[in-house]
Length: 114
Length: 116
Image (cartoon, rainbow over all chains, first blue to last red):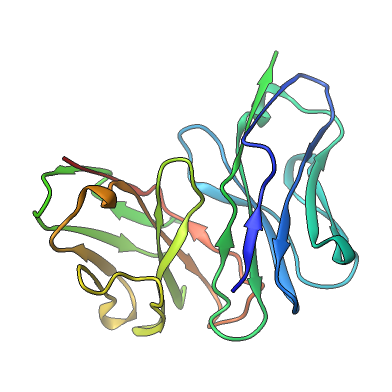
């Protein structure tokens, strides 16, 4: 079974700072990778996903993530954060075949200070 | 388009009582998921339906949890009897395609359950 590790529980940044949130997964086969975001008081929503092709994927609101297969990583980045990026970010993975059960990490809470 | 609807939004019960949650997925979505999210953790899949059939219920505590999806649309999740450790947010999600790992899941607002 696959598992997901998110290294940071809570990240605090000032506006305009660069962001990188770590995500590592454990699974030996082909995977599909996702970042979901939950803004305060809102539903979980998809930020971006990777399933094949260019390992650098771009999502909504200027976010991007890079899949590095050799490192089993899928880190989320944004060059300049805004106060509105304050949210909780979840990395998730499913494995090709079977039920494609989505496994989530524990999440990283991002607080952006104006 | 309307999103995934869930009710109730909040529920407080005492241990050993029973509780039920309801979910209405996005119209036309074939796959429906129930997740449990305990405070400080990511969502954990409890059960996945494709139309009205169960695809995966390997993490559903079947001695106390049950779920059904009649007619392949709405779904209910029931806990009977509830334990203190069932306190969590119960999320419902749906996706369009029938199977496939690249499908985007759309989440509802969740039901926050507190068991006293």
